[in-house]
Amino acid sequence: MAKAKAKAKSSGAVESYLVAYNATSFLGWGYVLVQTVLYLMEHGSDLSGLFHRIGYPLIYIQTGAALEVVHSLLGLVRSGALTVLMQVYSRLLLVWGTLYAFDYPEIRASPALVLMIIAWSVTECVRYSHYALSLLDIEVPVLLYLRYTLFYVLYPAGVSGELLEMWAALPHAATIHPWYKAFLILNMVNYPPVLYKLYTHMIRQRRKILGGAGKPSEKANAAAKKKI
Image (cartoon, rainbow, N blue to C red; front, side, top):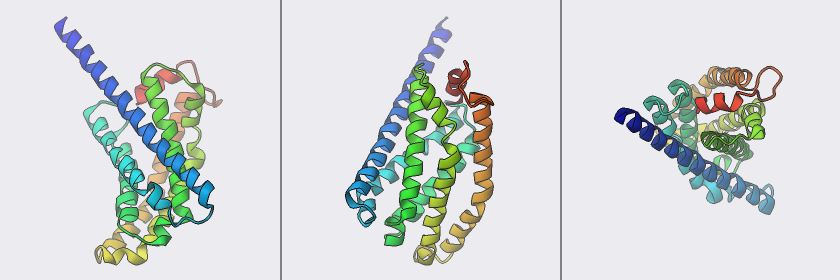
């Protein structure tokens, strides 16, 4: 009896933590998205001040996602640690190894940066809000559908922005280390197989959660909650 109560208390604490984590992440990415849109509305194609507006919030909120690897390794969520690690690693390379490392307009004030930010922030706003609400047993079919559909467009868009950002960093890579350019190129070459793995993983998840017709099944939210 005592063990059962302790287990239930521990499970409740973990769920509360995950709700707080997902809600905080949603707010962070929502801030980045709103500030990016407002900047574009105010300044149009002049991207010279975009990084100063959202650069460091973007870096910090994305760095916080490294906790998801820990969540997976500790068994707090059922997502595969390798899949999570691949996603987090590539983004950390972008925010720290490219955006933070190189203060050049072709990197910090480029259309590729806008493409990357929009793709990332929309994806994460949908993902984190869906996860937080699912943990609270709140069903939002539209969010579920978007979570397992938008990736068809947002994954290629985000990857395109990421590759263009790294490509723009190549001429400056030697300022970090003589071998850093080769390191970036190696990561770029590795993108197609990793994208294929992540893309096909999401397609399988979509079929599992939404079914072949693309409509949420009766057990969809329960299955999605288990995946968190």
